[in-house]
Image 1 (cartoon, rainbow, N blue to C red):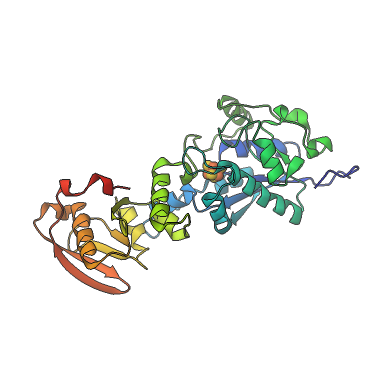
Image 2 (image 1 turned 45 degrees about the horizontal axis):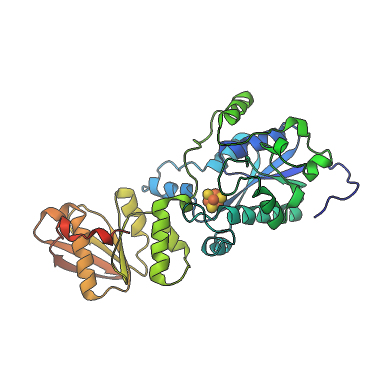
Length: 355
Ligand code: SF4
């Protein structure tokens, strides 16, 4: 979409922003709102969002306080409409085969940004927005927020000059909404680098005090432990592929793989036990009978003997480990059975089982 030679000034001017709920995207929205631009925002659900996981983990009991969703919270504070868009299905190809590769772990940040901006650009064209904006700051993230990657995002997302980055605009070429006089460049910022003091000062000037800590990550793909578990899943599946259930299960529990064809996921607290109990379909769920202890899920193709070993491992991680023998219950495909096993001793749980 190229800028027409003569464009009437729309009234109102409508901008669509990518809102994570962090400080930067909130500030970017406010800078445009202060210019009288009508702002709406979009937040994309990829399946790897840490917040959706912590929400599930923190609410094991019905009636508990719902966990905060940062983007919804920020949109509420800004007083703007938020579009929540689930892109998890299409996002699989971004994670499994990123054209621009991965960052430090399995985070395909550049492909991810291109994909999200492209999705937002489609919304812009079909829903009557005049341009897009993000809270990106030059030099803030090593993989996607660089002088050489911004043009790649603009080009490959097809958004071109219709993507404005209000926090760093003074360091960037003019965008179409600036050229057309829809946005006053003088009132935009030229932030760069990882120092967040300028953003915090701007937030204070705008009276924004309620924002999440920048240190808190938002995406499991940047997490080293999570990336290791996802790599293990791909290695033993023999393919770079995953289902929604797979990626949810990688977020919880202690993972042990005693043999290539089966894996145990062992709950580490009450919330994880509750969470794992919801994934029994297609797996075997093991618990100690009449004793407190973890819920253990077994997935893969375990034999009868493998399941006995799984019971002995599961017993090791609960109160049952203090007993010479314990009765474990196994539930799968609607069938229940019990086995009396001897809990494994600490030295029998091999280090290389831990994923
Ligand atoms: S951290 Fe995750 S959500 Fe953020 S750009 Fe990278 S891959 Fe995408």
